[in-house]
Image 1 (cartoon, helix red, strand yellow):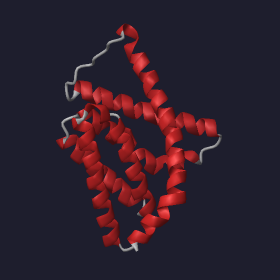
Image 2: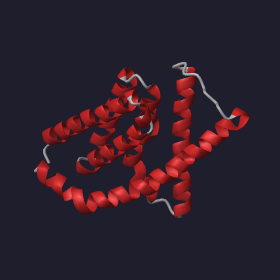
Image 3: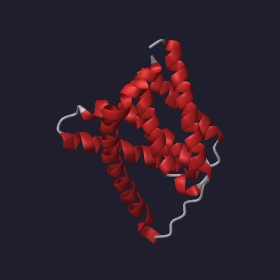
Image 4: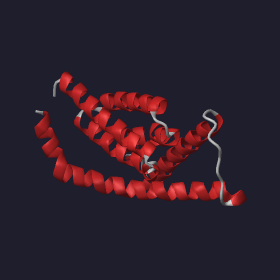
Length: 175
């Protein structure tokens, strides 16, 4: 595929990601779903073009979303984990044994999510709402890790579905 087609493809899908993130930013129920859906779009960019174009798209979308979206938590969740995870996922999966690979993925997730939350609290001044008392932070981290486990299984199934059904269609469109 020519470089101009790759760049145009990345630009169109970057606009789609920004639209999804905007919806997640203004409709509260989508605030946590939008970064997940956007990561699936990043997966398509990474597969159709290459990792270089995917990282450039990720960086551009992260900057635009963080600068312009009203919900900074939605934007930072994408920027600190979901935007780049699908790009590096294949490198993490070659680590043996599989348990170590999963633990490294979980560690990267926790570092990304905790870093984004700390940035929200200390840089953007978002108050920490803790309805569960002194165990609130531990409960939220545990729930976030359950979300990651679900996301990891869902992502594997979506990648298989994409490879079986949609990849050939997208590649035909790109010729």
